[in-house]
Length: 245
Figure 1 (cartoon, rainbow, N blue to C red):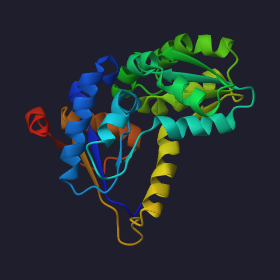
Figure 2 (figure 1 turned 180 degrees about the vertical axis):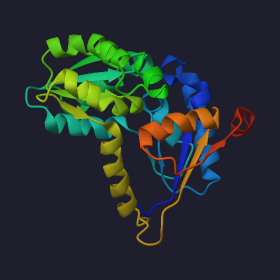
Figure 3 (figure 1 turned 135 degrees about the horizontal axis):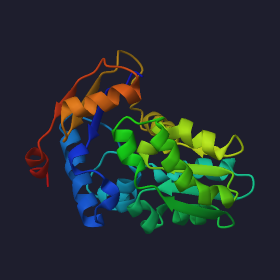
Figure 4 (figure 1 turned 60 degrees about the vertical axis):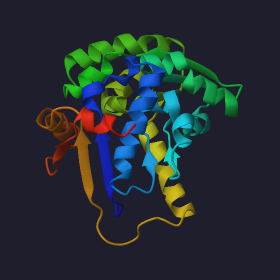
C-alpha cells in the first residue's frame, strides 16, 4: 500500500487473446517503455496472454525485474490440488500456447491439466456484467466440461476472470479451489521488492491509471470493479506508444 503504482490498460487493442505472438510482444514492449518514463522499479505483466506470449523475450530488453502471472499461479495451484487434477480457463492464445500445462509439467509432471477457452468472459467484465443472468448462463456453458472432469483446483487464467469469482465459485462449488494469478503474483512482487532492497516502507503510495481506450467508458467499468470512483484515468494515444519501439 505504500508503493506508487502506475497501471496501464490497453483497452483499445484488446482482446489480447485473439492477437498474434508478434503483436503481443510488440505491445508489451511499447507499454513497458512508456511506464519506464514514469520511473517504475519493477514491472508486473498483469495479463496471462501477454505473459504467455513474451515474458522471456521482454525480459531481455530491460534491466528492471519483470514478473509474469503464470508461474506464481501454477506454484499455488500445485500446492492446493489434492487429486492432482487442475483446470485452467483462459483466452484462446494462452490456451493454444499451452502456457499453463507446460509450466505445471515442468514442476509437477504427475498432475493432469485440463483447459478451456472462455472467449466471452472479457466482454462481460468490460461491460460490468459481473453477476448478470447472461454471465451465469455463459459461465455454466464454459465450466461444465471442467466440472465433469472432476478438477479440484481451477486457475483463472486471465486477469479479467478474477472479477467473475462469485459466479465461477457458485457454479464450481465449494470443493473447487479458485486460483487468482493476481493474488499469487502480488506475493511474488513483495518478495522481489524485499530481495532487491527496494520495498517502500514509508510515505503514502500514489496510483496513476492510463488507457488507450476511452477514459470515461473505462472509468465506468472500473468503478464497478473497484467499488470506488476516487480515481482518474489518463488517455494515452496509440501514436505515443508506437514511438516507443
